[in-house]
Amino acid sequence: MAATQEEIVAGLAEIVNEIAGIPTEDVQVDKSFTDDLDVDSLSMVEVVVAAEERFDVKIPDDDVKNLKTVGDATEYILKHQS
Image 1 (cartoon, rainbow, N blue to C red):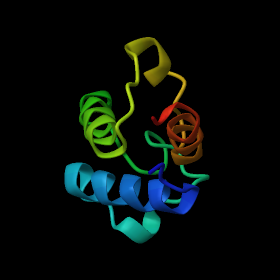
Image 2: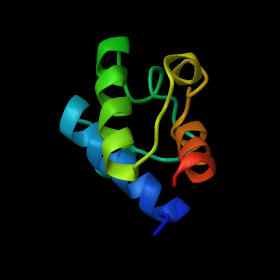
Image 3: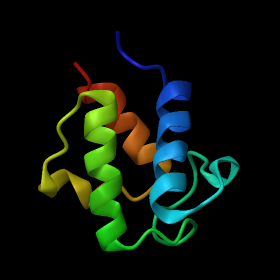
Image 4: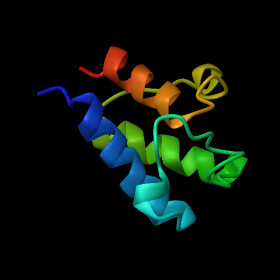
């Protein structure tokens, strides 16, 4: 069953918390991974891999650079999950 937007945001919050130590309540759709959440490029790779596994979606490297905010990632996962 496909995840809802709320489930995806909550899942991304847990992933960012595990990888970057950012409190889950700080992970909001309007937050930038790099500017607001201090997720560096190496950590972003970990976030993407974890999101792919959690939401059963493939995120090609070319698409990762377009995922600037939590909202961008949420929309991408909503569109591409199987």
